[in-house]
Length: 205
Image 1 (cartoon, rainbow, N blue to C red):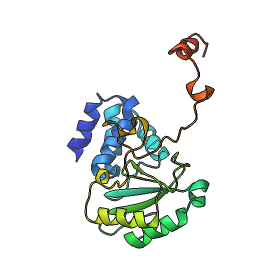
Image 2 (image 1 turned 90 degrees about the horizontal axis):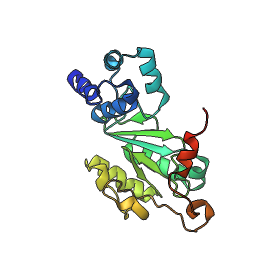
Image 3 (image 1 turned 90 degrees about the vertical axis):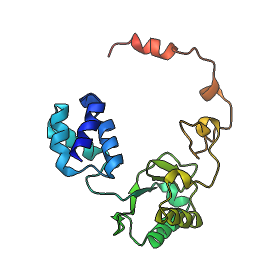
């Protein structure tokens, strides 16, 4: 485990400005960021342990405790509640056999609340191992939990087609819909590429 952590840090050339990338890669590998490596990470990057841990603790997607092989973050926004979140939450708990904020005894599934994930037009929505699942229903949740219990990869759990625009790109592959329908001056007004950057570069701090 220690050698993997060191390898990740070396991949980013021991650059402390890449701390978030390093933490992300470590968590993706272990399912969490083992507490015993906090000092090692700080030392390898030449920063204090306090600096490392303040970054780690600021982002709630990072965890020093195992979050489960499948970590489910269900949006807890007001819009999500309006669109049926409570029924979706209840079904997740019933099918997984745990309450939100917990991980199943076998370490397979973790259920967690999260703040708005930007899917207000496609609620209820959740992030599962970094992938968005939108327009959830109780029936759909039963399918997802069954797939988890059968060990299916998250990318193979989708039932709907990829979203519009570039969302079907091999680099994106997201089911999210853009929901941009009306052409107007805000989204498609005439502009000169780079004009804004040139103006910003000429301003004082």
